[in-house]
Image (cartoon, rainbow, N blue to C red; front, side, top):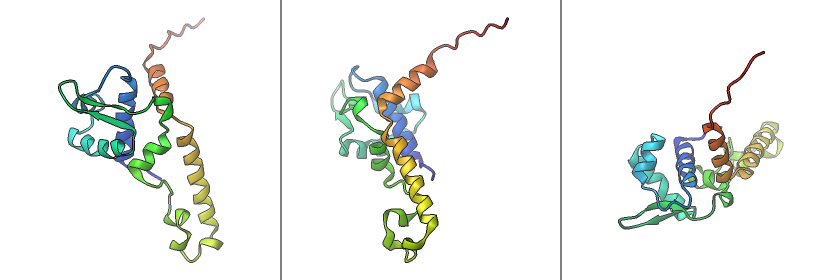
Length: 147
């Protein structure tokens, strides 16, 4: 399974909002610049996130977008579902009626297990987790001393 740029860029935009949580709304153009995402494309990604209750839009001179909920309340599974839809690697995992072999197909079982594994990682990861990982990556590496 391969995430599209919708899932990748949408998650990066949300990470940017989580990193600036509590500092007021962030302009989309600033997110686009920092994350190297086309502003036009980012505008399309934000709409389903607003509709899904993850992002809030504020108009006016101090307007922009911000998280509608705390980063620890936003799971990547929700983000990916909003931006990508199902993460099932094949259609019959979500819809057994799509194939007349579904009940007897062992490869469908494997694709189902793959979906469950991916779901598990996405469900157990929040935006807060991403913020913590990002901050660890940004910390200067300690010098290694060899004796």
